[in-house]
Length: 583
Image 1: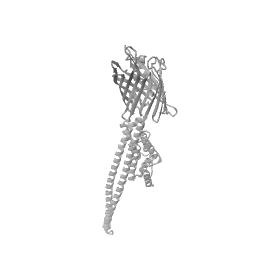
Image 2: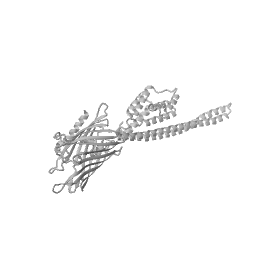
Image 3: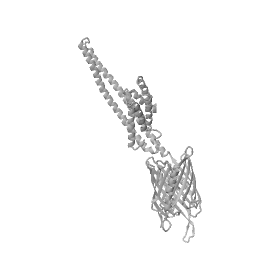
Image 4: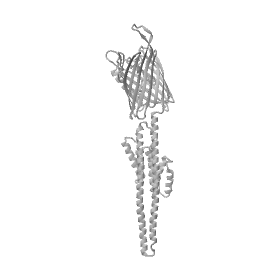
């Protein structure tokens, strides 16, 4: 009901200015290319200002073109009246971050026009050809907050026998899709915002500046929501450039709908260029229906409409068929693939940095233990030699032995303390190096999230997993090397909880358990709270994780695990707020 209410309100907004300022007269001021382009749009009665995802949007709304998903080419043609042929072709190429480029070609050709002499008698052996074509170049860019803007430059030429005229102009367009109302769009276009018109011999033909506004809504259909119904309403306003006397502001409306089944088959209906007062006077003129089918990138579209091309009040049925082809993946798919590639690079980098840290830490610990044993043995041998040279039967010798024994322990303690201090310094340097490398990768993670956050390309899998595992694994290694087996086991098990095969985590769990035979472990209640917090932390629900770990502090106010994790979660929250990212 909320969606319907928004659509009704938008329809009223479109109708108000028309009722206040415009005349109900329509027709007679359209250019040859006002017929439109693209069979999807024509099947919907030309109500296409607020529609998206079509190769021909360079014509309808370059701002909406910014939302295109596929590199696509589209062509169609039709025979209108007598020997006149109307044809169009468009190519659109959206990019991941640089906007959408498009080029198009539209034309009308008539051959075999009868020529007459100065007495209005037909010249039987003289025929005239007429060609009028337009080349379009368009660019559109979509901002993250749902606004698309674009412009289309147009060059057109008219040829009749030996006469030729050339002109140029450009269109401007915008489309807005509110971030919280992704099913709703509103668009606006100024066609021929500037135009030179065309001068053919002594005759000058000005292009009509047309203002368009439109709304569209997309509604999921069916139990599985794989189909969708699109409803669109357009209104256009323009001045009568052709009739003598005061120039009137004219207006009309177009409505269209499309029912698409699973992105493969679509049915369309539309009614174009009608005024509210004379809505049913010219029927069936203006009605259109269409269908489309797409498979393996290839699309076939069909549209039929009732037209009054010579303004005689006699509708003619025009039928046309068009082809289109979509190349490769959509922009969303490309973004997801790019995000996946970058994520793999980040995870590989963090994992390799962690493995290097593990190897260096193990090597450092081995060197420390070896050097400690060597120095201890040297000191013991030195003092044992001195003690052995003394006569233990003498009281003075016994006193000297006691003094030497004390000095032996003091010397060992001094040297070991110095060695341990050096070991801790080098270990801290290794930790700092890993932290810096991990921070560098985490910065790339944040950048990647901000880049793709609007498409939710990364929300299906938390790319911070690797950084989380690396951080916990490195911390567990340090605790293990320091002999803090209880906390080391908790950290190793936290890593194994998310990746049982991560590096050597299972090997270290077994090692630590062997060391913890007689060591007290945390209570099941504290462990449950700790792991609940870990789950929330990985999901980036940092405040909820803090709340869980605070429950541990109520049980054990000095719990180091809880305090350390709370501090880290608060730092993450602060960083996100500084970057303007919500939790």
